[in-house]
Amino acid sequence: MAKSDLPILDQRRIEANLAKPIYEEMAAVLGEAKAQEILGEAIKKHAIAQGQSYADAARAEGSEPSLPGFRALLPQWQAGGALEMEMLEETPENVNFNITRCRYAEMYKEMGLGHIGHLLSCNRDGTFCEGYDPSIKFERTRTIMSGASHCDFRYSVKKD
Image 1 (tube, helix red, strand yellow):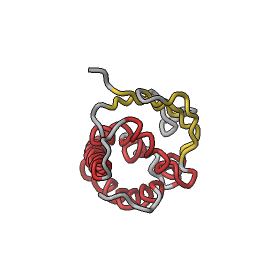
Image 2 (cartoon, rainbow, N blue to C red; image 1 turned 90 degrees about the vertical axis):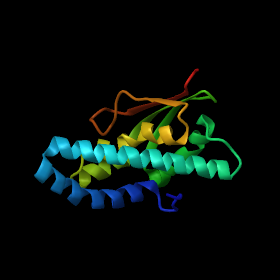
Image 3 (cartoon, helix red, strand yellow; image 1 turned 180 degrees about the horizontal axis):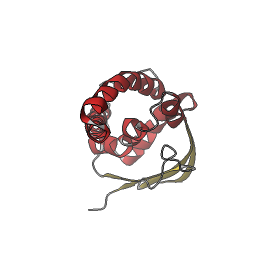
Image 4 (cartoon, rainbow, N blue to C red; image 1 turned 45 degrees about the vertical axis):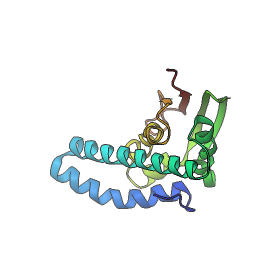
């Protein structure tokens, strides 16, 4: 799971094109609820493994995964105008921002996958951190994918 030079938006489009027929077959055989449960768990596991891969890469470069290190990764998800962001707070302990435009949500809707876009992308946001640095806490109360005006991303370092 090495870092790719392909923008993440393009990676998600490729993944969605592969996931769509598999998801549709699972839904036909198992029902929507079970298909969404299976897809959601698979994507979460993949996001954790991807976070671990990024953590390993940071260590190989001589640094430990951290919230500031995670913050430095965000431009990868924004590449090509994929996300429009309003930064609210950026400290070593907190990174808080709102996403005001999400081309991931737009793409999934265009592909006819708006009903599972949250599984394909949104659910990765917190679980990636579980693999990257488990001390990072993630909170979000709304997403564009679910119809909100913006996504509220709140990352902090867990206090022991």
